[in-house]
Image 1 (spheres, rainbow, N blue to C red):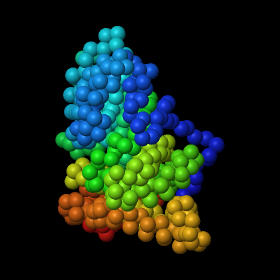
Image 2: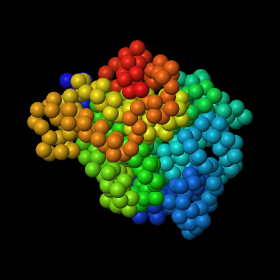
Image 3: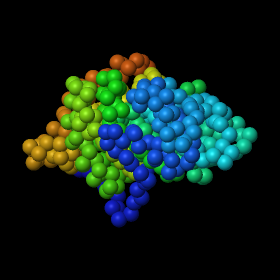
Image 4: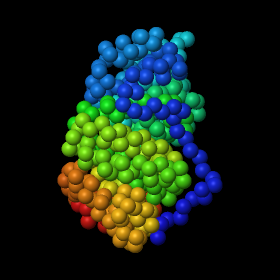
Length: 401
């Protein structure tokens, strides 16, 4: 049976103050920024900026809205503690200006922007910036909170996966410590999200696949998470069927804007869902797998999602049956049969996306399985419907090696 649902009369829900969604909405970015400040501090990624027409076009857009532009950081991968500290050291003096941090790119660029915006107002003058970042990561350093409102962030996702445009955290890694942790606060939710599905058309197929599976993983895990709440579940029921249908179409025809819109919508909803509920086993293991093997996050999620769905099948029978029925109106009436159909559907979808099926395929050595089990904890794993400690997780991972 399903895990116990929390009391629906008692929950919080946080979200961006403003969401602009639809093809062509990127053109409205300057007006969104102008409502929040008078200078755009841009954090981007190479592909993200190219999808928007390049730096010159972006500068021209801001200039036409009487906004100054400063390019403060470029994401070249998942942000590290050093990346955040380096951007902070190079920030222009604020003076009387009212900067708005504009993130243009995938989840890595948005997470870097959110971390910089938070640290810009919370790090003390002359504080060692690297240590200041470490001290604000969950379970690391002194555990200092984000107590002062960050600089406003406007997020422009150019992939459809992480939902970082709607989350309250920024994932930051520290390779030398072999950790990947979150800087987290309700204050870190972007003030605005400008979601233009057309910006995702230029994503390579492997990025489309991994990003789409990441969003679907977040929808499924937040739906059954032991900390789940009613609003994220309702949103998932609306967004998941479209995403499941759209991912194969976007891979077959990259220019299919209807499919791209369904995936961008699902990614946005998945961010809202995970930040107001939680995740589970797939994300718990994916973070550790990224540290150990450098596996891209979406690829790791695609590897782990079928295994997580199978592991949680007995505890989540009714929820999986419900998800299968909203995806396919012809699903079996019997809850066991419908739940089994959902498990098989997820397996087929990950096969279509081309994500690896075995841990050995991403370079994990068999001798490192115990390390993986011992380091797959954290907030995500705590939300899994079935309690998994290293001893119970290890044999599950061994079967997937």
